[in-house]
Image (cartoon, rainbow, N blue to C red; front, side, top):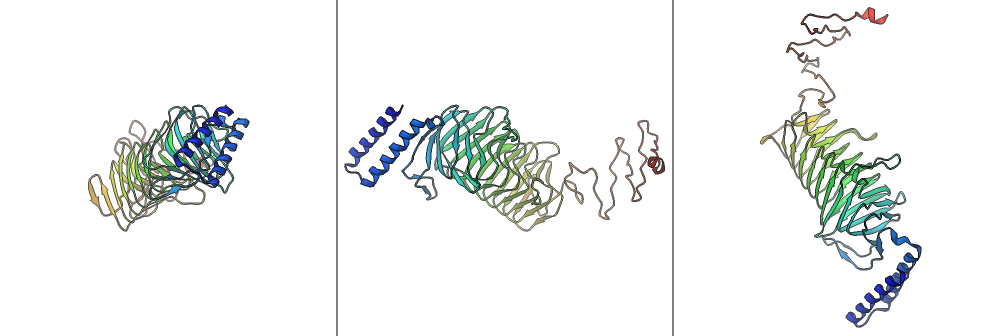
Length: 394
């Protein structure tokens, strides 16, 4: 193996020399160092984890950005995982099955994974698994289409449940000038901290949640076509720009309490958001806290456009609900608690409890302010009186 590698590398050097006629002494030194590096890798057997080659050439990634120095370039190999344990820029290319790219670095390390025509299909583990890092960027190269899939049931990793095609315990950023396609039997992209979409094109289809974060989920720009149970889920969700098409069997956007330090809120500052929901008790935007629409356009088709527990403010932008432009943010349970899935009743304008109908269409009276109990009807239509307060205290 060692002799074959050296033979291939020297053949490449010969071709370069014939093409260029002359070669810079510094370049010769760099190539020599790369040969030593590859020879050392062959001796230690480290090349069993994917095929890695030190990269010295510049690669354009669009928008005028150029990665001039890769830390390494990997070609994926079926059944061989890749481990990144130091900060830097790592290019991933090729097509393979059952490959996980692990990132396990120091707490402050920043890592960029550059997908350049990559296709990975796994049975039960994430295609990218960030175990530890300061921040990880997953970037698509210009004019490339990259596909990541998990087709079976995800398996646990000790105490961890890595249940997404891209799963990160730390901050995660998606960006680039190419296209990333994701298919998942569970979740698509999940971060236990913050998740940010800076730009790029994404086509993601999942059984459960598409983009999910425990803390903040922010979309700065990009084209996103999302299909799943809930498509955007985090404690705080902000959309600043971009074209986002959501097809959801449950809530399209769900700002729910997943953080111990943040309060739920959904904010739309710009962009075009189109949401189509499935039938049933589903909402276009469901916030367990507040909703702010300051700009952009949000077009919702479904039974309930909004459901919120806090305040809702519409200061700019366009709201379209089932084909009609409206000027206010409606609530699934108007004047009430919002979050109708967790709360049975709601309050009228005087703050008193309203009485929902019983099974026969008659109205039941809930407890009054003195704590006395109501008398519900029995199955035959006559009343059943429960024990009095005094009897219960015995």
